[in-house]
Amino acid sequence: MERHVRLQQSDPAAAGGPSQQRRSLEVFDRLRRAIVTGELRPNEPLIEADIAERLAVSRTPVRESMQRLSAAGLVVPRKRGWAVREFSLEDVALNAEVRAGLEGYAAGLAAQRATPQDIALMSAIHAERLGLDPEDEKARVRTNRAFHDAIIAAARNPKLVDAIDATGLFYFNGDVVRMSSAEQMAQGNADHALILEAVAAKDAGAAEARMRAHIDRTARIIRRR
Image (spheres, rainbow, N blue to C red):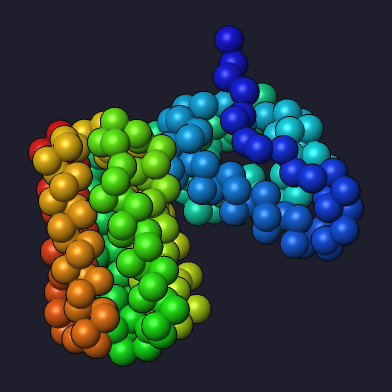
């Protein structure tokens, strides 16, 4: 039996407001994040009509989003539509290596450009992570993504954001959480603390090196599996 796409429905009133291009981008972003965070599983069928109904949009933005997802290598065509592409752990690990370089650089820029508000946000997310139950997979993925997003945003370089997004978010999703132990979670939190410390101290070199080491650690977890 085909599984249904587990996506929160859009507000029907809002669906008619934005332009078609904006709706297409919103649908693309939501589907892409659902895929790379593991909410939509490898080989899961994606039927355009079903997705359009669940998101309360027409089929046009869904069709356009599928074409973009295909170009990004995230979905593959099937007889009755599309399916989530199955990536190997090697693919995920290679993406993490690329991201280590890009996001390391972003952390260095964040150390130079972060505002007190940026640092306060990073600190709040880090504090939330310290109180998480290691078994709470969704919260671990969400807060990890939020911490890294806060670092990237503080770099204030939209082109760098695009480059990082192009590598995908695979390096820390539900699958990786299930591979990692509570001890490895604690190590990740310790890495975050060191990164935050370097950013707050405006030490660009340390921030970059610590971010690279942090992402490299995750890549090693994936490779060992």
